[in-house]
Length: 156
Image (cartoon, rainbow, N blue to C red; front, side, top):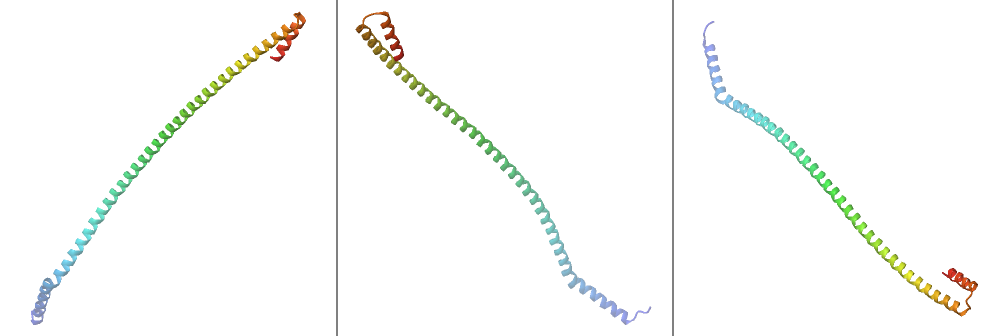
């Protein structure tokens, strides 16, 4: 192979092309590639951070939900205790009222009983006096006396 002017011209053209490419073409391509790699790396890092944040948020949501359930259970338990307390208070109040009503009724019955006994005593005394008057007005004999007593017993 002969070295001639074409080969030298092609070598010089190739050297200029390589220099031109290295000087003007390659740096913007290399910068674009590096920028793209950085963007992809940032995107992957952001995705990893987002996944971690999502996991943390899900754990917090579970904790909040668990807390809410616990609070709900506590509120229900407290309401049930309050319900039992109100029922006991109402029962006690009803029992006290029942006892008061019974005591009043017993007192009224006792007063009525006493009043009726007193009325009965007055009536018996009046009948006894009336019977004694009748006995004294008639002559005293056993038949008349027993007849008057039978009438008194029937009146009582």
